[in-house]
Length: 112
Image (tube, rainbow, N blue to C red):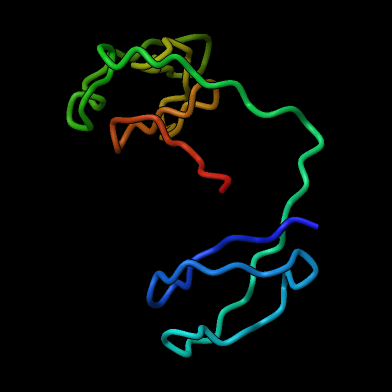
C-alpha cells in the first residue's frame, strides 16, 4: 500500500501517512495544526503527455487585452494568443490549451 506524501499547510513540514488514513484528521507534529490527510487518487487513464510549449509566442497580460477580435455569425470572437483557437468575446480561459487571458500565461495543474 503506497504512502500519501503531503505538506502541513501551516508550517510546510513534509509528512507521510498510509493510504488508508486518507481523509482522516491529524495534528501536525511540528506546529500542532489540525490537518486533513488528502486521499490518494488512483488514476485509470494514462499519465498525461508533457506539452512542448513555444514560450516565444507567450504574451503579457496587458498585451492579451489588445488581441484582435472578430465576428463569427452572431458571436464576437477573439483568438487565443497561445494556440490561435477561437474564443468567445468574454472568455478568460482558452479551453483548448489553458491560456488565461488576464494572467497572460497557460495555467497548469500539479497532481502531486
